[in-house]
Image 1 (cartoon, rainbow, N blue to C red):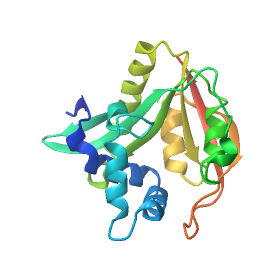
Image 2 (tube, rainbow, N blue to C red):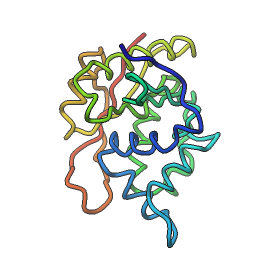
Image 3 (cartoon, helix red, strand yellow):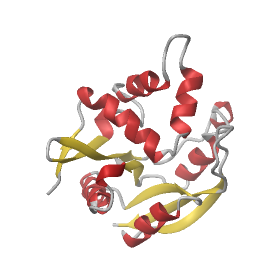
Image 4 (cartoon, rainbow, N blue to C red):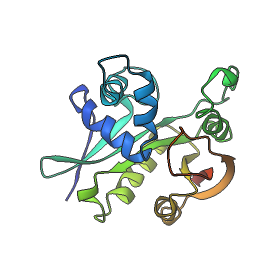
Length: 192
């Protein structure tokens, strides 16, 4: 039976790997671009996970543990309402479609990351973490939960639909060069 707990600073390395799993390699590519000479992409990811602010922060993460091992994570938070799109053109092209979709779900509790290490897949952890997301959304007074998935990730989209999420909007994905994925980002909502 999995245990769920808030992430701590000490979990930053595991969180960075799980974020890269959820992002299907795109975070690692972006972090590599951000890393200076002599630094690795995962160092950048770990530093970002250790931040006190921002969407990708240990403060927004819930971990699922099986035995004594971290098995999966959920990173989520309530989106601003109203959602401010000023300055979007200054963001890297990769992020602009995602931010435009987030802006279509103001005030929802946004599931930014849902990821499971491969050896723990097939145990229902994703659905259980989505139940945790529903609880967090209700605690925050959010009217709905939201999540964005790539159209190429059919397994994840099936999971979200099984959990009651419905597609409401799409944006063409702009991914880092060299990644095999292509398609649209899909915004899904679930009323609470």
